Image (cartoon, rainbow, N blue to C red):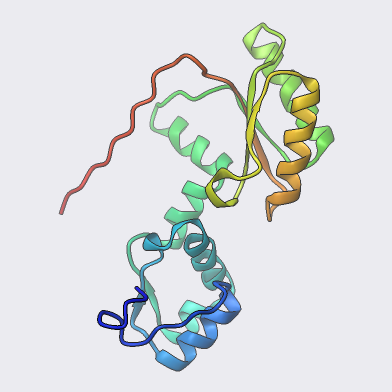
Length: 176
């Protein structure tokens, strides 16, 4: 919150793990709630955890654990979690280079018995899915993959068969 009537202190700073560590060192919070700050806050929370900042200052992550954030953000881990509970998903694969992306696309074409297009390209750990898109042909596929690889901090893409025409339902479950 940046409302001075609500917040004890307001910082207008870049949201990076290094900047947040200096704020944590100064303010000594008991906990932080990254789920209220969108993709940037989630990425930052993971970095704080990976660099040992949370343990160093005894700060608890509330709202979601580092493992839960990582599982939700890492495309392959999320897919594996869905498979473990019996939920099917689109034919897909992970690529870390243009050459790997071509192999994944060829595998999707073989698995679906089609040309392998359209496919959905989703870069990992990007704001609001930036850098991703739907490719209907090889030219679009190359453009989206190369842009996505450049934008993903982990240079990772999830490439999956398109489910255009399917119905999508979203659900939230709230409980105590």
